[in-house]
Amino acid sequence: METCTDTDKTHLARAIELARRGAGSVKPNPIVGAVVARAGETLGEGWHQEFGGAHAEVNAIEACGLEDLSGATLYVSLEPCCHEGKTPPCTDAILQSGIRRVVVASDDPTEKASGRGLGILRDEGVEVILADGELAASARLLNQAFRKHARVGRPWVLFKSAMTLDGKVATRTGDSKWISSADSRELAHRWRAAVDAVVVGIGTALADDPQLTARPDGLMADAGAQPRRVVFDSLARLPTSSQLVAAAAEIPLTVVVSRAAARADTDALEAAGVHVLVATGENEPARVRSALDQLGALGVSSILLEGGPHLAGAFLDAGEIDEIRLFLAPLLLGGSAARDPLEGEGVERISEALRAISFDCQSIGEDLLVSARVREW
Image (cartoon, rainbow, N blue to C red):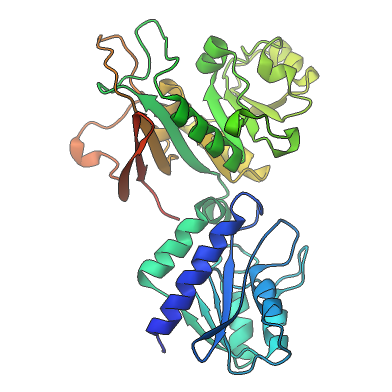
């Protein structure tokens, strides 16, 4: 089987770079980039620019401006689609173009794809090469939410928190505003804008009466561009007078309750326009998985988990945290009763600890942002 040449790797790296331009514009579709080249010369480039618009492969082919692309190679960051959706199959466009060699960085794990497009191309005499190593890993990382949702039906979970140098997220009285800097909070709003849902527990909702909206650059985004707000509230205690419920008609709000919630309280939330979801299971981690299964069925493929410590611990115990981003602020709180970022059951031995796959640090204003991936899909 032929492997990628150095030239292939250069063009494929460019396709991955182009894919990033579609971030935030194509949900729930994956971001994809493509390059068409012949004899080492780039003929056309493209990426998936908007949901419902032409896919990267079609844009790259059209950018060539040539009727005959025989002898050219298509480089694409994700396996070409072969099904009819909002646009025709990309495999048809590739075959019609005359391209007879395709180099792919990563697979598409969805049931509609999963190698089918590559099989169609091979059956029609197209040489197909799958990349491996760092390029393949880089391409997979572009679409972690898409990949997890496709493979297990649950959303990808990013846990975000802000803590002091001594590892605390709130004082013993519960005060936490503000541990992180204004620069860090601005970045967190950008993360909100990039996900399908923002999740908190009832403790946070009662203490802060938050809006949980995305306000990058200090400006309120359109309601249609806002993430779903989700509150884990086992006993349906969220007041109908809260800011979250007040905006439920414009911005979707889901309250996750248990079977122990009083019917009168869930009825009142539903009457106010809230989507009430009943999570089942014998313990909190099981109910987290139940809720994520149901949110995934609604089309939620990515979540920003903003805590607090009790809910974050339940997500960790459930094995449902995929990436962690912690703002470390130059503060010291002290106090044995001050809050830690993660509670829950945890592990008994260091050997059982969840170990990060990757680990990175960067300065954000006066804070240090520590990022870690703990699962890859």
